[in-house]
Length: 194
Ligand code: SF4
Image 1 (tube, rainbow, N blue to C red):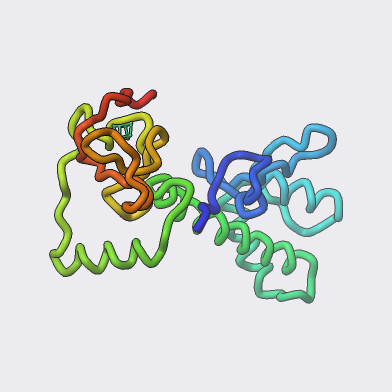
Image 2 (cartoon, rainbow, N blue to C red):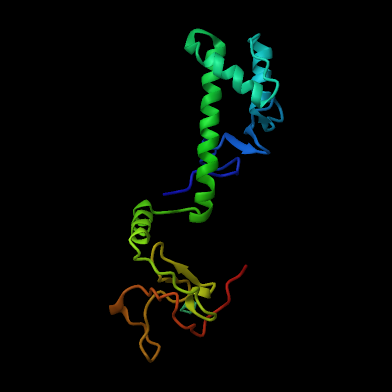
């Protein structure tokens, strides 16, 4: 599963990241006027919309806007203020959920497997997890050519794709070479580049 949260404006999933939190406020990415379309706070965005369309919303600051939106929400779709209030509620929800999800995805990185995560959490709850030490120096796991296979302690090697026998000959019968990360380095070992 590809991560959804991102701060890159041109990313595929930027539509899931329009609202974000900064400095204790909700911001609207690209919500400013033409031609810069700079990021603006939700308060600024609603205040500007209210002024342009003659709405009964002052939007002085986040706290007062919250009160105004709570009242307007009771109007439902009977007033434009009520519709803006629903938009405000959606922005608050989207921001809260994004800011909760983002640190989780920062840990999991760009691609993760929910079934594997569920398995790990269940195993941890049941006391079946054991944390192994980090790979030692000069092992496959600390090598720049090692690509770990998601959810496993082994990976593929950019240099060798097949197993070799003791004489260095490729052994096709054993399939793809997937060394464990604790395997001691071979001659092609290179430290990981930072
Ligand atoms: S140590 Fe050798 S076998 Fe292991 S990943 Fe690096 S290059 Fe491949």
